[in-house]
Image 1 (cartoon, rainbow, N blue to C red):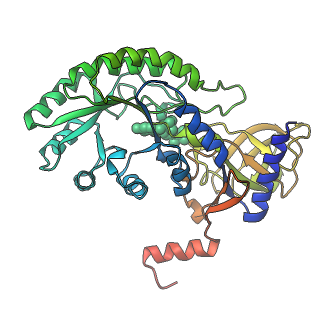
Image 2 (cartoon, helix red, strand yellow):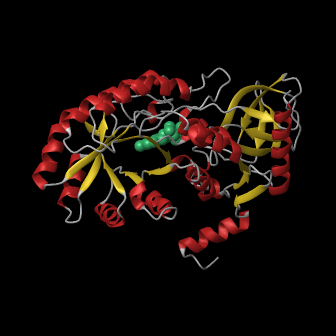
Image 3 (cartoon, rainbow, N blue to C red):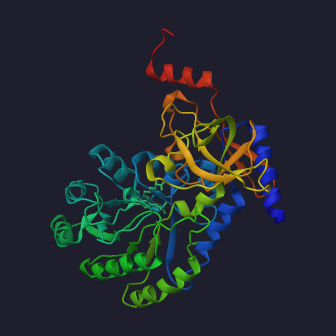
Length: 413
Ligand code: LLP
C-alpha cells in the first residue's frame, strides 16, 4: 500500500470525525494538478481554458481554478451572476444560453458577458437589442458523444445548438442587423469516450468557420472524461494535445492576429478531487442482497440513479483488508431506487464505518437537493498546506426545516 494512500485515508477519516457525515471533501492539490495538466498543453498555440462551473460551483473551488489562470463557462443567468463576483472583467465570462428569457438576455447584455446563442429566434432577439454588438453562436456539429445518452449534446436531434443547415441563415441575419458573429462554439457531450471524436468535431467546426466573416475565436466545448471505474481509460491530455495541435497550427496560419481557441471542461478539473463521505447506519441481509445503509443517498449524489453512473466506494475503516463481502450501498431516501452502488466486493463492514464515495467532486453537490426535506451535506477543502477548511457548513435538520418554512413565508409553525 502506497504511503500517500494511507495519508489520504487518514485525512478523510479526520475530516469525517471533525465535521461529521454526510460530507463532501475536496482535495485542493488534485484540482491544481488537473489545472496544470491542461495549461501545460498546446505549446505555441492561443488555446484558453474555461471551467464549466456547473460541475462544482463552490466559490472556494472556483477561486482555486481561477488562480490557475482559468476563466469561467456558465450556462444560466444565475451562474453568470455568481461568476461575475470573481472578476472585474465580465468579458471573461462565457455564457452559453439554453432557452434564455428576454429578461436574462437584457441583463447579460448590460453586464457585458460573452453570449453564446444556440437558436435562431434567440439570435434575432439579440440582434434586435439596441445595445447588442457581437456574440458567439452554438452550433450542433452532428457529432455527439458522452457517458450516457442524456449527456450527449452533439447528437443532431439533441436540443442544443443551431444545426449546420441553418448556419447560412444565422450569418445573413447578422448582416441584416449590422452585427457580428465573432465566435462559434460546440460541445459534443460530457464524458467523451474517444479523443478522436472531439477532434472530428473540431475539424467540422474549423470547416464551418469559413462561413463566418468576422470570426475571432472558436470554442470546442468540454467533455473530457473521468476514469470512474478501474477499467476506464484515463483521458491522456498530452496525447489529445499532440493530436489536436497540428490541426490547430494549420488552422491558425489563415487566421488574423489575436485569434483564440477555447475548451471548457467542468468534470475534468474537479471530479477526481472529490469524495462524498458517509457513515454506515444499517447492515441488512435481504434474500440475496446485503445492504449497507448510509446517511446520504440520491439526494446528495444523483449520478448513479440518473445515469447508472459508477463510483468507487471505499470503506475507510478497513480499506486495506481483504474484499470478501458483497454489498449494495443504499441511501436514506424513501425510494427503492436510492442505491449508490450495486454489488461491490468490500471488506466486511461494521456499523459506523465511514465509506468514501470516490470521484464525486463534479456534479455531486451542484445537483444535490433536499428531497425528503433532508439537509444538504457540508463541504470541506483539504488544502495544499495540510489544513482543512469548512467551505460550506451544513444546516442542521432543525435549521433545514426552519429555513424551509421561512422561505415559504409560513409563519404559523
Ligand atoms: N460546456 C457545456 C455547454 C456543457 O453543457 C457542459 C456540460 C460542459 C461544458 C462541461 O462538460 P464536462 O466537461 O463537465 O463533461 N450531470 C452530468 C453531466 C452533465 C453535463 C452537461 N453539460 C453528469 O453528472 O455526468
